[in-house]
Amino acid sequence: MRVPLWRIAHARSGDKADRADIGLFAYDAATYAVLKREVTRERVAAHFAALARGPVEIYPLDNLLALKIVLDGALEGGAARSLRMDNLGKNVAAALLRMEIEAPETLPRLAASG
Amino acid sequence: MKAVRIGAGLGFYGDSWRPVRASIERGGVQYVASDHLSELTLAILQKDRQKDPSAGYARDALPMLLELWPLAAPRGVKFVMNAGGLNPEGLRAALAAAFRAKAWKARIATVSGDSVIERLDELRAAGEALAHMDSGADIEDVRERLLFANAYLGAQPIAEALARGADIVLTGRVADAALSLGPLAHELGWRWDDWDRLAQGLTVGHLLECSGQASGGNFGSALEWAKIPDLLHLGYPIAEVSADGAALLTKAPGTGGRVSFDTLRQQLLYEVHDPHAYVSPDVVLDMGTLRLEDLGDERVRVTGAAGAPRPAKLKIVAGYHDGWMGTGMIGFSWPDAYRKCEAGAAIIRALVAEHGLPVEDTRVEYVGYDSLLGANADPACREQLNECFLRMTVRSREKRAAEAFARLFPWLGLSGPPYAGGFHGIERAKELLGVWPTLAAREQIEPHVSVSVEDA
Image 1 (cartoon, one colour):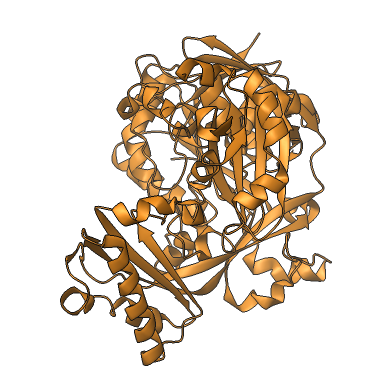
Image 2 (cartoon, helix red, strand yellow):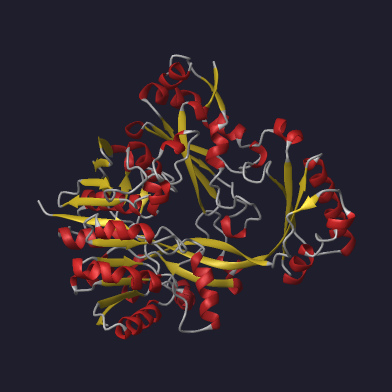
């Protein structure tokens, strides 16, 4: 089934120079395996096509059940020269949580909420 | 085994020290590590210093210490803070005067030598290109517009200050995590080539450097954030670190917030790029082997950091003037809130052209619809808005143009679309700042670092 990430994961984002970075965290190990498979560089790049000019990097961390996602060229050259309301990229994580992926409905958080 | 307890102080210039009281009174901390400098803060401090040569430090350090020192002194709690900004000596003088007026005694140290703006020619002559770390651009492109340039120093000068008996250590720019790593290495006798222990210390410092973000603040999630108890009384994170490097992350009893696997891992990866090579001046951390064990009851055990030798080069961040931002904002209510904002934006754009205002970029955002989510906002919501604010910003080389842009907006109130509100004056032009990250050999920086310890 199609599932928005917010139902199965949590996330925080921040900035460094012109890069926005997002930590995406599965609530459980089964979900982490799905995130690792479904949240690809290509899909993330497409989701943020209007935001990030540069390439997308993804670092999986099995020990933290997390993906570290880095969006290059996403902050108009950096927070202090950006015209954006969200100049620090704090809401990039919220935008990621709206991305939909294919996930089995047996995942713990999906089964629990029905 | 010997252990030391460090509590988080501020996480940025303007953060609250109210939660630090609980860490001192009930959290058993021996040190408070307080971060007052974001990438941008030095630009603010540079302006302060231009107006007054004795300024240029984070002004919140003084009221913070005046409030906390009476709690800290009888308990032997020490402070390590980068609040010195561009003028650690200036902060020490101000602090010493304030302490003398109250007949308080303290040994106050300064760490300086991080500022390299006066040494750029010397560095270039020594073979440091100072090219932009990401783009490779030549620093001469922005040289005339530079406002500050500071190297990120490591934990060694902080440890030295503590070894010389300092109660309060005031630094300029240091790596944020060094504010914790310094006291850890000093107290626990870590060698500066004991990479795995230093990596544990760096992990702890990184977890503490954003104050409430490691104890339930800004817990990025849908719905789950609301389950974090009592944000009003959130306790800042505290780390108890033993000589072997193992750390227990917790917070003061009776405080709100949450220290758990979930809240800590959000902070662990915050503003980290390659988690297998998190570079600091003292050690390079690989987070891939870290273990976070949630013991329940607001306690998480952190072990397993892997360290690689420190880098040969230190990071320098310079800031340069990058024009002016003009901002205008006006709100419209139902009916047709979004469409009225769009109409307003079209009128403003036409006026900019008509007046020939020299603007380079124009940005249109709809507050209440897409100003935070950008292109990821859901357009299905757009036609049903109860109300919406038009926010427009421009970039210009001329301050005058940025100011003139802001003055275009009031006219919309009587002669634009109906049901406007929320207009409360004209926003001043804001100076924009470009950030220039670069590298230089540590041999070019470290001989200029000095530690000074004096009794106040």
